[in-house]
Length: 310
Image (cartoon, rainbow, N blue to C red; front, side):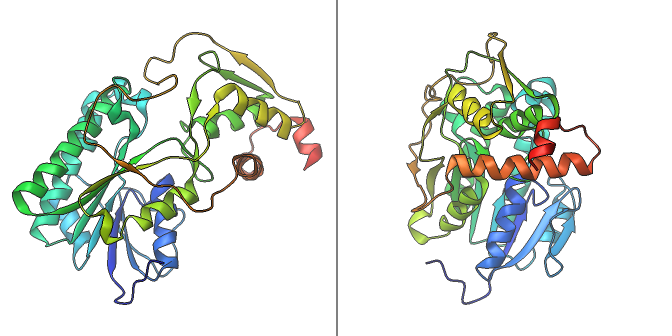
């Protein structure tokens, strides 16, 4: 089991976000001193956590946050694949320039190791400028290691789901549609295959990456179970007792893979999985009620049948 006897200090960029906020919680559970760094305050910040508000493209902001840290987990940046094709300049600025600034500050401040949040889309020819930016960032990380001796671990995440997800998260979006509209509209034919991983499992595996065996390695972090999208939608239907209509748009998902992302061949990565994991059905059920509560508090309409069951 991971131990932190020396109370090491860890900087988490993108700490206000989906994975970053959960990972910060995981660090606290293992006794690390956590520094949150994002451009907006975190709704999930604990009273004892130190939070620095700043921009990852501003070296002065980064140096202010990084002081005294042993490790950086770099989760910040543009994460919406569809939006990356609409806002190319922002994607390059946030992902590539931001990562270069983080790497520069890491070298200047003698950081022991940087952990970079990449994606399994680096294996693909899909994923738009999001994929392109992650490929470029991986190469930047590797080159900084060669030139300056900066140790790294690259974390290639698959499809993550769970509480605190952004509105563009696929499962979050499906369940929200089901709760509000009683209907899920899905582009594609439902034959797409994914390996969803619960965000708490993803956070624990990110923590496991601190082990010495993963220095200068590339890791794949995805779920243990493959499932077709149409099977996932059927699970949501059954959880909501068949009150949800499913509609397929049948037009292609331009930026998303059908069965596998593997086409482009970057450096080989080792896949790590948790010894135990959140069951997908239980994770979906929990998320239904988390989102229902959230939507009701925001005064969104919730379909009557779900309100009655609650």
